[in-house]
Image (tube, rainbow, N blue to C red):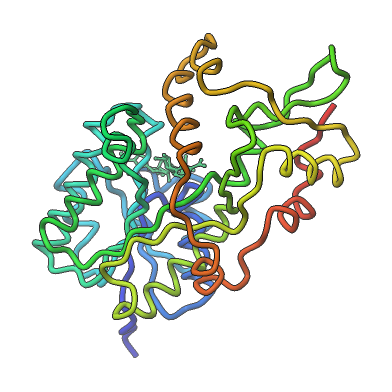
Amino acid sequence: MSDTRHIIAVFGATGAQGGSVADALLSDGTFKVRAITRNPMKKNAKRLHERGAELVRADLDDDKSLRTALKDVYGVFLVTDYWEHMDKEREVMQGRRVAELCRSLKIKHAIFSSLENAKELSGGRLEVPHFDGKGEINDYFREIGIPVTSVRMPSYFENFLGAYRPVRSDDENCFILEIPIGGVPLHGMSVRDLGGVVLSILKSPEEYIGKDIGLSTDHLTIAEYAAIMSKHTGKTIKPSKLFPEDYEKLDFCGAYEAAGMFKLYMMGLDRDKEMTRKLNPKAVTFEEWMLENKNLLNLR
Ligand code: NAP
């Protein structure tokens, strides 16, 4: 018997966001998964294939490959990766390309992983290219009439294992969480819980098409994140005393842009914990995530 399930094309399927979406869709089985990658030989791609995903090679910079990848699909999950090239215009072009194909191929439901346009929100005071570009793509999907739902991820909890990993301070004999936003709470969520959210949205298109959904499972100050980390690792972890204005003067690539993002966080972003829980009742809080991941932190 032929498989009549709707096909969902998942961009970024070998990465964190798309990987979570592909995983949730494959586990559920309602939809067929078409995993898009530039390199089907990647380990993550092969793993998805073993679980039943179709692998299609395509590049967001290449129209022709995208047209083939989106043939016969019902829905699309799109995440664009600013950090691969750090070029806002290129990210916007990638998103617009997919939006235009959604129009010409009459795709029924697009889910775009968006973020706020900081420049617009701040009346031009802030520019945060990896937010602003996604905001522009979001507007474009709407302008050209695509049936789209936008989801806006908060800071991943997984950042605490990478970019936000506590840094040893020999002076203070402790670890510091170098997130320069003072006492302002920061929204967070595990990126692994995005997939369940996207699955629920795809299953109820009439409820969610046209919506912009800000996601979060926790809204804690850096001192509160640090206290939970201390509790579960047995190490002393303290919040940073830095503010974005100090951070932007630090000497590393991307410091200025990161400082802009922290200023945006301090303005407060629109995220909806209740809606997130409704869309994915299994989504974990920071403390639950910490319990599962404390060994990965491996603080010395
Ligand atoms: P990731 O784990 O690094 O994965 C990136 C994915 O993008 C890979 O699967 C890669 O696929 C795909 N990709 C990159 N360039 C591509 C291209 N030209 N054509 C086709 N696929 C391409 O990244 P992620 O965390 O899932 O997503 C990154 C995005 O998340 C960034 O734009 C960032 O701004 C946003 N974000 C991050 C956070 C956070 O807290 N970290 C929060 C909100 C939003 P292949 O290599 O297999 O082709």
